[in-house]
Length: 215
Image 1: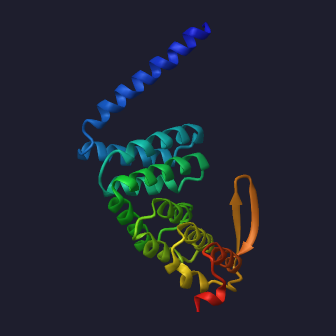
Image 2: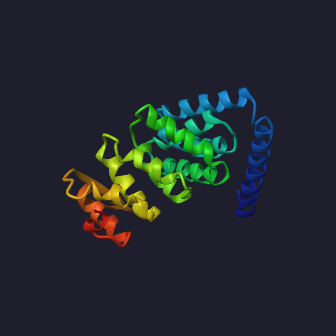
Image 3: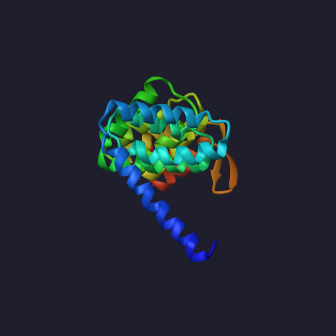
């Protein structure tokens, strides 16, 4: 097949995809569609063929974000818990964009995850989602992650508070100064071993404070 033919196949595939998505989302408020997306999300999360599962989860993250309602927010958080970084990026971006448009849905979904004491990778990603959206209720929600039993989740919350740059977070950060729990911070392809106490001190410096300033 010639290069022009290959390019035409891409154009045709894009057109078919957009038409199929538009047709699917015509019933975006229906129970049938919500149940279908929930079911397919669960199937993709447990698919043995992880390459196929990854492709499906990336697409499902985009679709779930376009369908309103708490069940779709819960599905996005479930996708955010997947072990594949590409999938978590897709779900995190979908939640962030959804938060810009319908923040209450995202906030309530995160509250539900916290209320059921959820664990896993998603709990380390959600504080970042909140910090990026930066709504007024972001601070009290991120505070709840500071009490999570996983030190990795606490570390994510500390870093999210630093990004949020809200002076009201000073006392929240201060209580972790001296915390010796060790965490691994991933920065692109690098990993750094540090403690929660050191993270808290760095966050306080970012907010223009020293530990004693929060007393």
